[in-house]
Amino acid sequence: MGADFDTERARIEQRLDDICSSYLRDLAAPIRDAVEYGLKSPGKRLRPLLLLFAYKAAGGARDATMLACAPEVIHAYSLMHDDLPCMDDDDMRRGRPAVHKVYGSRTAILAGVMMIPLAARVVRDSTRAMSMSEDASMRVLDTLLDAGGASGMIGGQLRDLAGEGLSLPLDELEAIHSAKTGALIVGSLRMGALAAGADANRVAALEHYGRSVGLAFQIMDDVLDVTSTTTAMGKTAGRDAVLRKSTYPALLGVDGARRRAHALIEDGLNSLAEHNLLTQELSQVANFMVTRTS
Amino acid sequence: MGADFDTERARIEQRLDDICSSYLRDLAAPIRDAVEYGLKSPGKRLRPLLLLFAYKAAGGARDATMLACAPEVIHAYSLMHDDLPCMDDDDMRRGRPAVHKVYGSRTAILAGVMMIPLAARVVRDSTRAMSMSEDASMRVLDTLLDAGGASGMIGGQLRDLAGEGLSLPLDELEAIHSAKTGALIVGSLRMGALAAGADANRVAALEHYGRSVGLAFQIMDDVLDVTSTTTAMGKTAGRDAVLRKSTYPALLGVDGARRRAHALIEDGLNSLAEHNLLTQELSQVANFMVTRTS
Image (cartoon, rainbow over all chains, first blue to last red; front, top):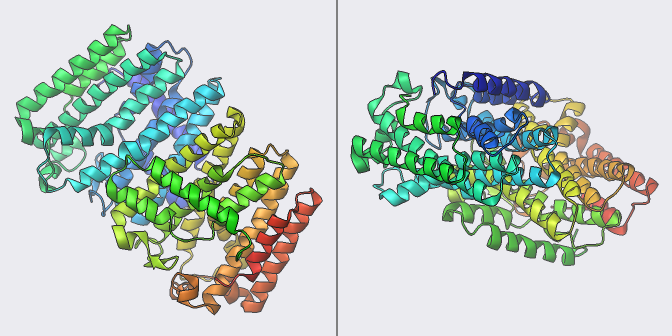
């Protein structure tokens, strides 16, 4: 997304700092440090940006930056657990040693687990500060918990691990990615839409966009795993091949995978346009998905 | 608690079955099985009973059994993670192989994590079914998330692990147990009190009782670890000595530890009596703490 969203991202980083300084004070030192290390590790902040842009597209007028950090907390916990030796067993993440390499598996597990109630607390406090009704606040929280819970990321992670070494058909691969990566991306858009008080049709349109963008993101992740270097990726390149995971380039070829990503983006943007939600920001994020190089 | 609470416990077991059949359907099979194995493993159901009895003592008149299961879900997840090889590394739990021995560490971690949003979902749905206001429902949920989160169990677990092999003074040992075991016990009582609409003083009195009962429970756990057998305990007896953990019998002697537990129970019951909350049920649970043999 280059320099396009620098202002928004600076505000998000500031809020992530606020979360570390105000919510982690009472924690035992290694857990506090591990949470902060995971949360403040450099990232695209895609989920907060999507939540913010959905909120604005749906007519939200308050500052939703703190709320937008909640899905990033869940995302950071999921990366922490993904990298564990008994999961993907990856030593590098975002250009730095993974949390379990720095703090040990024990602390990485505990720190990850405590980030779920932490994210819930961020939603509670930020929706209150935005003067949202208890009912709306709860719907936003339910969305976060659903996305981070059983039906969402965790189910996808398990199926992903179960698929190692297997050759999966395209529909199964898409189902895995929809759950593992897509659930929280769709959840972020839904949270933004609900916080802005969008009606059911507009919530659905933003979710549709989220499914398309999330899948395109994952496809390009697979493509970059093949075409990029470890330095540019900030994590170990070629890892999918080592783990013998099914990937889009393996199924469709690199060009076919790129085409699939482009088609998804177009579909997502059409869904927004139909409901008068196509802002420049949401369009830019979508295009970034298929043009990014890291 | 012997046969005293058989009726209540049968209802709780029924609700735990309901949770398994209605909330776990969409999960991948190994996670679903692991959650069900952990949740339905035989237990005293102490936390649900305490929630129910606090609710009734504070004047609650609806059926709170489903709500009462929420802290048991959190408790079951914590046992699942406690037993992991990188945590306490225990192979037995409640007389059966630990979850990670049956399903592997990977599934045990994922299943445990998904039980946090599951418990939140149970609170949301059950408080709605009890026609509680959104505001009261949220206070109950906040209590559960706080107890299961950073300031509560997870912080205690880390300090407990950090204390292995060290000789801890009594106040540090009590701080650890207050956080690790006590947080969810106190949280269960607070949830029951809030669900019944108790005022701040009565909530505080039930929490006070909870701290006393929770600590007495832990003291007797340490005592039983010394005096009981693996069969009676349903988990590996003498484990604390193997892990060189600081325990109450080590600090106070077996008789001194028992006396401390009795004094705590008396203090907790006095707190209830002062606020007209001393029901037969809460008294029986407290006495069970110091008379139990497993």
